[in-house]
Image (cartoon, rainbow, N blue to C red; front, side, top):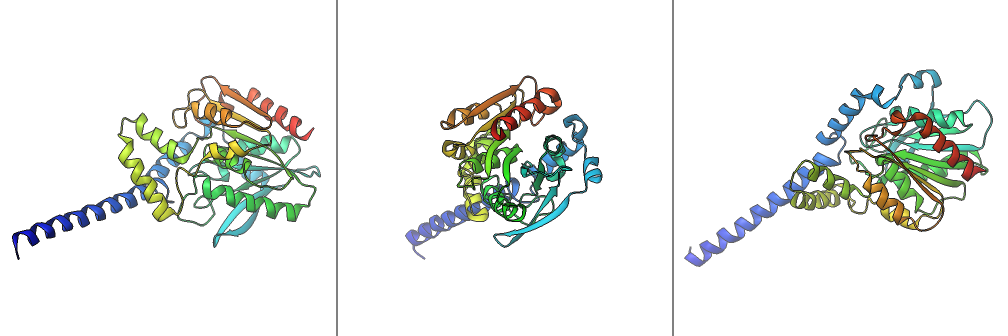
Length: 312
């Protein structure tokens, strides 16, 4: 082999190895962030479950109320959801959406508020969470479509006079805000988003930067990994894009001391909504999803005021 041919072989082999290494690292980032058994998700879930009392989440609520399990298919996946019927006959329905690596089991605060206000309540387990199938976590992008299908299904089963409010926190809040900009039935009247991120891309970047990890190359690989293996873009998992199109009323809630999803993201989301009623409430001293735990009376009052506004 000539010297030139040897050099070319080394160069092209090096390029091939580096390319394979790059795509392998993209796959690693996909596995770290948005698959069902990701280490980031396991850490978040472990932390959350450990501190249920601090969040004032009471899982014994489910034993007392015994929700009905519903099922639906989306993208070939069997998704689960849980329906709580109000003791009084009502056509009002609250759709309550959990966060990243959580499930309906952690949404007892919102479920109780809506039941007390005379609503039926539906709580989906998002894909790759709880009892729902799926490998890839939707980060609000896939979930907003799934929840819109749930809404269509519920209207068919409960009747055309059903009136709906959608709420969620963290990733569920982002799902709520993405939904707010979608084409939805007129039955949907408003949205409540607690501790939503602006986009999945922004959120993972913030987590890396806040821990003094150089985010740029890792986020580039995470984005490519999400596109190749998760079939969606982390940048497209954007609550900002949702609220820009939103015309219905939205209540934004965030904890001032949130170190997981920073409160400035809700400031950005609030400013992005230019059409229709909007209200923003920041809870001083509250950490991530702890606005209720910090001031439950104010939190419940906000829900009641917003419900009264959109339902008369």
